[in-house]
Length: 185
Image 1 (tube, helix red, strand yellow):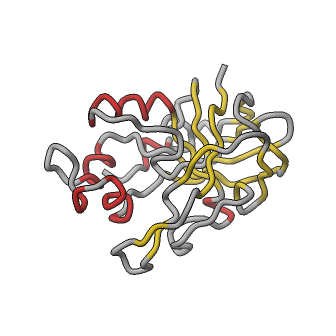
Image 2: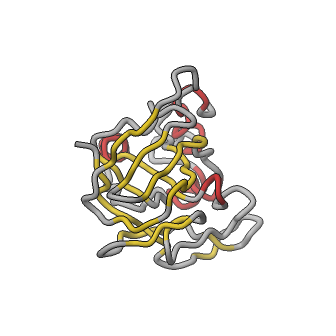
């Protein structure tokens, strides 16, 4: 069964060397149900709304299976929310999801897959080393090349969700590309 293992919202804003000067990438799991609206999870914020947030990027999902891959690759824990995701999932290939695919999460919330995450320099700085990972390779390029970027989601039907809620795939457009197909590499 596919499910949400954590719902994450901003824990705190951090100073950032980028153009905006602050980042809201620091997401952490919350307890209990979270209200989901067309702009995402209640109590979450985005510092750079030009590239994050809004109706077409209301939620960002990342799979535990992909986090486990990165944990092994980097030799460090990748807890829920660490990559800036709002939803940590298990049992669903989020990168194999097709653009326009719809999921029901819990009893009421319906979301639609809209686009892949485009890794940025803020994410690279968050990962440490001035944009370079432990192997000395550029983090943005390495993250993108693995095609494990995760999808942004549009909220079609609002409601509340909680960790443990089931994810049910409602519809899949046959001819649409997958997140993996359209991810930057």
